[in-house]
Amino acid sequence: MLSKKVIENVLNAALDNGGDFAEIFVEDRFNTNIHMLGGYVENSISGRDFGIGIRIFDKFNSVYAYTNDSSEENLIKVAKEVSLALKSNRQDIVLNLMKSPVHNINPIKIVPSSVDKSKKIELLKRGYESAKNYDSLITQVTADYFDEEQNILIANSEGLIVEDKRIRTRFKVISVASKDGEMQVGFYGPGAAMGFEFFDTIDVEEVGKEASRIAKTMVLADHCPSGIMPVVIHNEFGGVLFHEACGHGLEATSVAKGTSVFSNKLGERIASPLVTAIDDGTLPNEWGSLNIDDEGTPTQRNVLIENGVLKSYLIDKLNGRRMGMKSTGSGRRQSYKFAPTSRMNNTFIANGDSTFEEIIGNTERGLFAKKLGGGSVNPATGDFNFAVAEGYLIENGKITKPVRGATLIGTGAKVLEKIDMVGNNQTCGQGMCGSLSGSIPTNVGQPTIRVKAMTVGGRKGDE
Image 1 (cartoon, rainbow, N blue to C red):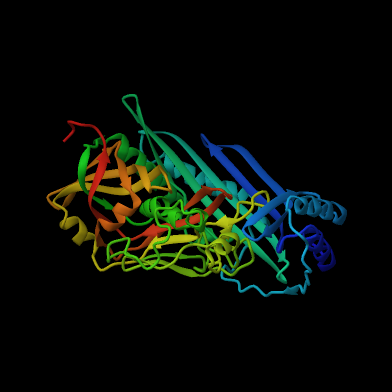
Image 2 (cartoon, one colour):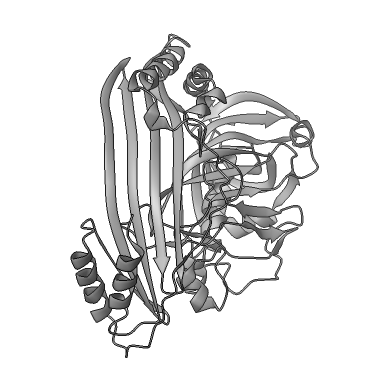
């Protein structure tokens, strides 16, 4: 992607006016997005995005710039402009660029670009028809196909030079159900760090049915009562609550600045002894998995919380300097247009000992949040609110009628302490996570858990 000689010249230019670390990130990305609405392809976009980012550290400070002109002359010009932003004396830098091998944890069988677009559209039609024909209450369906191939090169003044290829594929269906002037939405969107063989592992018709099942169930549901009650949060995408309310607070982006509720708490108990939480970027072919992070560091399995005790943070290079700690392979970015920072990969609560049936049977009255939707969180305080995309009442130890309009309100740290049952049915769901370094693919997950007391927003008087 760039010759070793060009890389050496650019890194030297980047350190011309000082600084003690320089890095080059080269990206060449190809992607396909096909959107189907009303049974017809509304748009089909295939594109290429190429660019180069240059970053310099001076102790705890950093400067970042990017360009899509890869000529040596331009790259040296950009590097020198970046270096001028640092007011330090140049130190002698000896570059010894040794190419590092990459251990591939995401084997690809069928590169998506080798598959004719007509086959991808056929998948969309099948998913669409399955969702649209699920029930007469389904009034609108959209289906999306996505694949990408990202080729990267990372080199830095510590002697690292490494290249990698990343491929991801995803399929999404959104269904809308309507009744008596009310509308409810159902969504399902599995994805993986796989090629076109991903479609040997999922059934697109079942994806469509699941989206429509949720929409139909919710449009027929009563409004959820409000109040403080036990809440059982199901597996798979239920893990988005931990991801948002706690995971972001464990990223060095906020921890290093002391703005996280979890800053300076390593070794302290911050959760129920039943809770063990992990971020693992090494799980083969999972949506959030990477061979190396966007700083060239191999990803790893990071135990964040073990039996309720805070064990680790998620750390990138720059914040690792600030904290006096090593990178955990957690430096990520959306593209060359963003400087990397600490981010999650595949974040989940580990299995416990209870069965799903035991958790429900031991809950006299409460809310079963089967699927969570969008939400917001303040990482400094951990305060959050989440919409429940699919919910049911629990009465006398049994799941009874569906309810809609439920919102989960609370504080991440307090919710961790109030988890009193953890299931043994852990699975993951796929999503896109937004933060300082852009939008990136991440897995969220957990087994079914019970929070013994939680504020549920709904409608008063709907008991």
